Length: 585
Image (cartoon, rainbow, N blue to C red):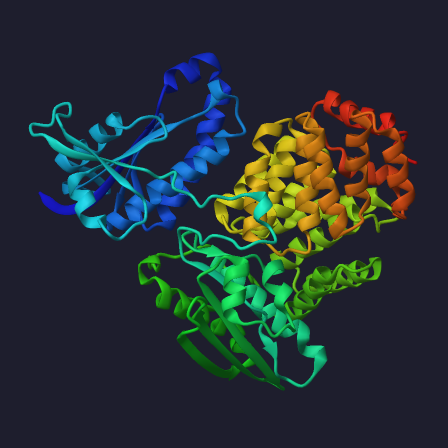
């Protein structure tokens, strides 16, 4: 017999038979979604599933650290998914991990090492993780999760007592929406902000190129779920400002800062990058790349890997990570994409969005299989409609839905594509589908602030108001200085409105309005004032804010009011009517 040492993860669903008996189709559908999430996370952490039957899964890892990290990632992801279900419909897994000798039989593993893992899973509580003493010995001092010793246990059909530990995986970074604007606590994982790379080309026209390179590096780092990566919009709030890295570290709540420069001359490219410890200002790593422009993607990859290796080499698992997000070899198409993205992020006017859409379409013409160009086209079309710049929302929504579907078909692993698919579902009034798309985007990239915002948004439209605040708070923590903070706060205020917390809704609406006097912020404030009978105050607000209504008001309300339950829609309109406002005015 062939034998080897392996880390075995075993899991099953607590109360699965009851869930199937109560609603078989729903239980099987949920299990399929959760099974895909579990499979992805096991693969991402260097493991492989070698056994599954019904609600059970058995996987092998070569590293105890990676195995426990995978188990924690699984429970955190499933907890987020379960928040969208009624308490009696939630599917809670129990996980057990053991390091032991196993027998190899083809692709299957057998023997005592597997059996112990299965028995540890039975000891675990729903949503719990139990590990053996042998696993604990390997991970002690290497992971930040508390381990609680449960003592030596006599497990079924195991002839000896097994030391058992419980992994306290809920040790997440506390997030409070009120922290925005103040000093932020460091997360319990390596935290990074990538500052905008400086354009050293002497040509202001190349600004888009430096910004695009920075954004791609942020995206690459954010795919490492055991890093905490500040969103692009907050990092770029420091563009053009001479701010000490220690201050930036305190304001963003991060331990590491990456900064650099780009010089482009003809077909040659010089990129410099350096990693700095924010608290001390010490340079941990620096590198200069002198390459041809065609090597830009290789530079991005090398820089990202060097940063990861300098901070936490253990994270470099070695398996093939997610599919490439650039997905084009056409540098002209890539440059058009960068220009369009740069204009989209400017978002100052209808003209910016119109030009962004033009560049996205041009990128698609140059490379019809460039998934990220379709993704950005969908984002810009949705943003133009939501910000009230579209003169034909139905036209823009039809194009954005087609672009989002094409982006998904070209790159199913791109989290941004699932985010824009969520927006497309909002536009089509398919809130439950939007919920699933937002969850998928976070599964693929837990650092994507926009996806957390979209999840909160989707929960509002599906009526899960009490579960809205967690993802919105996470979005605010991932991007504490985001120009879109007014939109995050608008969703917080709308959630409080539907929970009947009208004073809280007014508070967050006013904060959002102080950042941007947008029509969406004003209507939530007016509805809240209406519900409290403060009609005179509402009239004063209408006269105080000269907010231009969208040119296509009917189309705008279609996007803003994607509620599943008509009663929730009526409840919001009722608040506006009490304030003396009717939709369409």
